[in-house]
Length: 317
Length: 317
Image: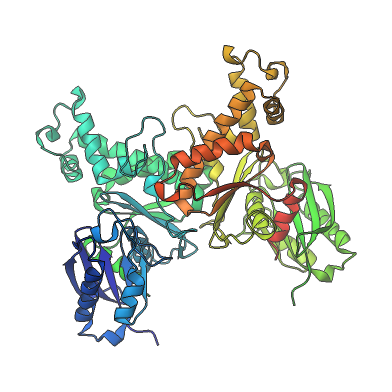
C-alpha cells in the first residue's frame, strides 16, 4: 500500500533544504544543511543528507516514507547522477551516483532530476498547474531554468537534459555573453543577473539621469524591483525590456509543445505586473493566430520558501 | 487479433494519395485521387476516399484492414477534424469531422493528424528513426513543417497543434513576411519558396553577375539546386545561408527536447551536402556544450514517392 509521506531534497550551491511532505503538500518537518563539501567529500555530503532524512522522519517513522525526490543542479533522471555541476565542488569534476548511494542507505526509491524539472512537477502536484497535462515551467533566478510537461510527463529527452530553454537564442547578433559560453541566450537577459546588467548598462543615458538607481552601488534585480515600485522610469523600462525578451521567446516555446499555460517562478516573478504585463503583450504579438489569447502566463502558486522542497518531494510520489 | 494491413491517406492541396500497406512498410496497392472539391463538398470528398480505400483493399479483403491513418494540413488528432485549411476549400471555412465520418463509412478506426506528424511516425515506423524514442522531424516543402517525438510518442500539446517549428522566429528585426501573418519565421527562409526568394533577392548583386540563375525566369528551389550542382556561386551561397538559418534554429529545438536526431525530409533535403553541411556547422556552433557532437542531423530514409502514404499508414498501427 502507498505510504503517506515522501521526503523532498533541494540541493543548492550553498545549502540543501530537506523536508517531509504529506499528500496534500503540507511540510510536516523540515531543515536546512550545508551543501559545502570538498571535491572528494561527495559521500560525506550524501551521508549527511540521509542522516537528516532519517532524523526528520523519526516522528512519523521511516517506514511511512514512500520515497525521496531530489532536485539538484545538473541532476540527471536517467543516470541518477549529479555531474559537471560548477557550483558543487564535490560534483564538479566527477559524476556522483546520488540515487544509487542513497537508495542503499535509506532502503526507499530515490528520484533525481534538475531543480527546474522538480519545480514543474511540484507545480503540477500542489500548485498553479494542478490538473494540467501540458505546460511549461520557467524559473527566473540567478539563471533561467525550465521544466516541460507534455501529456502529464516531464520531458527528459534522449539524454535526460531536455528543457534548457534559458539557453535558446534571444538575440542573434552581438548578443550578450552567457555563462554557458554562447552569446545571446535568454538567460543573459532574463535572469536576475541579466536584469541588473540591463539596468547598469542603461544608467549612463541622459534619459535616466533622475533614476533612483544612480545612487545604488552594485545594483541587483531587487534594487530594480524596489525602484519600479516607486515608479522609477529606468526600472520600469528594464522590466518592460526583460518582459519583451521573455514573451517573444515564450511564443516560440508555444510553437513547440502547445502548452495550456506557462508558469513563471522565482525572484523576478515577484515583480508582478511589472514583468507579467510586458511578457503577455510580447508573447501575444509573436504567437501564431491559432494560439492568440489561448495560452495563460501565470505565476507559481507555491510559497517560495516551500517550493523547492515541495517540488523535489513531488518527484517521489 | 491484429490484422496484417493498414490504409494510409495523404491529403494534399491538389491530390490525395491512398495506399494499402503491410507491416514491413511495403505498399501493396496505391492510387491518387483529386482533393479538389468545392466549399460544401467535404462529404463528397470523404465518400471518394472511402470508396477508393474499399476498392484498393478488395484484393486483400476489407476485413484484413486494421485501420486508416490520415495525414492532412491542419488535421487535428484530438478533434479528428480538418479545419481552417486554406488550401482545401471544403475545409477552409468550416471544420470537417473526417475521423467520425470515415469510421462510420468504413467500420475501422481512423487516426488523423497533420502531414508533418504523419511523416515523423512514418520515419519512426519504417525509416531513419527506427528504434529512436526522441527525435524531431523537419519537413522542408512549400512550407516548413515539424513532428516532435518525445519518449516514443508524438507531441500533440494541449490543443493538438504542437510542433509548428516552421513558425519559430529566425530573424527578429525586419524579418521576412511569412504566409502565417508573422515576420521572420523560419519558414520564410527555409521553405522551397524561401530559398527561391533568397536567390531572387541576391541576383541583383554584382558579386553574382555570372550566376546561371540570371538566365532563369521565375526561379524555383529546384533551379537553385541544379545551379549548385554545376558549382554556381550564388546557388551554393543560397544553400549555405538556408542551412545556417536552419542549423541555428535546430540548436534551439535541441535545447527544448534533447532529441537523439533531427530527421530532414522533403524537396530541399535532396540537395544533400549543399544543405546538410551548413545545417550541421551552424547547429554545432549554437549548441550548448553538453550536446556538441551528440545530435545527428540525417536525411529521411523513406522514398519520397512513398513517404506520404507510409507516414499516414503508420498512424494506424
